[in-house]
Image 1: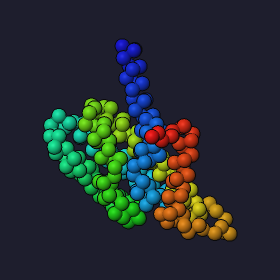
Image 2: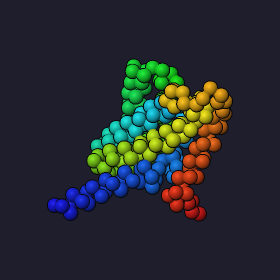
Image 3: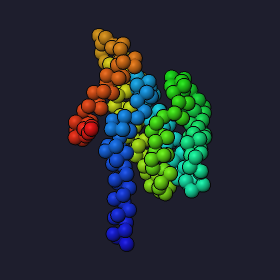
Length: 208
């Protein structure tokens, strides 16, 4: 019994580790880059997008896992899109109802979660092949990995672009904002630095 419990929790730990670090969707798999550049000018936007994507991955993957023996293989992509779109609509409506300012700031990028490669990728690569209990952990891990990188990038960009962190001023009155950091090129530069740094720390290198 103890051995079974140890094996069970070891598998959950390995799934979490893979999603957050070993196969991080942005840093390692290089997915979700567009949204990472678009919404990371402020930390609150990054948190909202990260939580939204995490919810969509977990919920859609769980449904795909439950229906994996029912969905015809020829229609699986269409089925994935329909399932994912339902939960994206839920996230969009929730933000508009309770966080209208963030919803307005994120704009169309909330709706574009439907086309986020991370969400579709987890459904196709993992959820359709595994039971719900592991699929939920996989979705959480990849969502956390995505959110972690977004918050790192947004933290640097918001401080340099606006002199604030979570909209609270932290720089002195003489600080000159780096306007480029509020734009996509600044996000690309910071994200590239984090990709390089994290890959160096984890000793991950591309192989031919």
